[in-house]
Image (cartoon, rainbow, N blue to C red; front, side, top):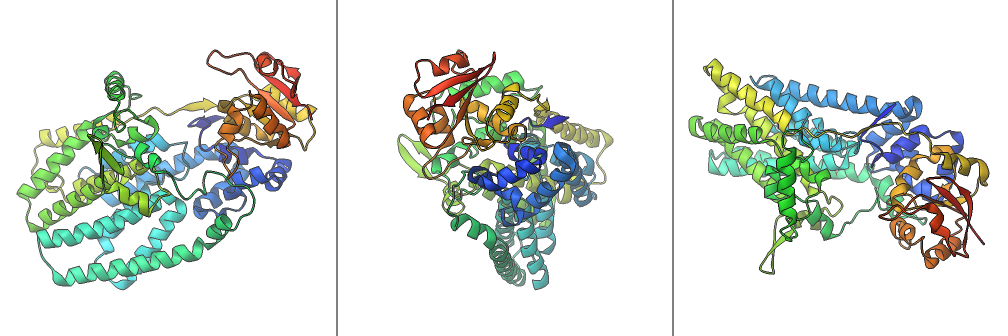
Length: 529
């Protein structure tokens, strides 16, 4: 069996699919696991109840192979929805492919289970276009859709909520700038109010279990997924920069060398908005030079050659794109030590839980794809020569190659013998720790093998405990003393340090730990009580 995306942020779901009945009982009883797996144990009280209900149920039935089926299914769903919405455009097929296999998709496929439902963003924009100026009934249904998209994926729901308000602001401004219509303006404002009230009411009712679970819990907590506030530094790190839209992925086979040199130049500037390129999130910002060229040509030609209606949709689309772009910016930037705030700061204050604003790029791409397919002069012309038509097709297909990012695919790893020894040679109630920290994700993945209480799973944080800090301190006397006080019975140690120091050196001259098992690449230490 192969695992798409490797063992990464989806590790909890991978573990859940492999647990036996004893493992399920352990996960439900041990406070650390109970908090970590809460969204799978009781998905209805999670923040994404629709996605986690199906993942929790089907992964238990189908095993770890479910995730490959899931990713293929969502990819097909993304393409089918795009094809159906864009089908009247002469460029339907390449645009649907660009949407389906975007840089955003390659960045999250296999890793972030709920983020790949991009079909909801395109469908949302289509529904806003189709029904925002219709009846109150349609406004109510739009509110229901906003709730549904958030129940599938919080980030996708967040994108759709922003896109909903962005679309209607753009619509009102375009009415003012291009074709004033007081009656339609009143309908838009009324429907925005109805949709907002509907969505807010349903959110309150359906997310009440999550709010209660989050705020009234008395046991330990975890930094992900229920941490509702993030520091402003996270918003700075994971926001978009204008120059990153022109920076290809250094993993792309076409631009590898060029992109690597570009990122290296950024890193030498020592300016905080240039030297922190994070490939996992910033690579998705690149649309491809060819797609950007076609988008620019489409906007200019449509505004220049189109009538009032075409200019209206051009202005609306440009306003929509600019609003989203400004919201993706860092909360602030500095010039000569003076701090200037951007619209991105508004998201930090209003939506502090959504720190990765670069993910709004999917909304930006949807706006441009929708414009090219539905409104652009190029798409509507029936008299384009075959050469021009084929040239446009070629440029659009080229965008697929430009934005391709190879994803990590690994074979299901063999069980490390050290975990089999933990399973056979330790008491079932034992608490273990793993050192160094970069091995904790692997240790969590192997939970179905050893079925013991792991005290330091990755990204685990409470008010008084941080897994990363605790693990990094285990090589010190104070750290081992803390482990003993917390009830830890065994420490599994792998080679550590920059030079890969032997696990045997971990316990040298220590009066707190005792080496009881030794392998070439791992050791088990018992903590002396």
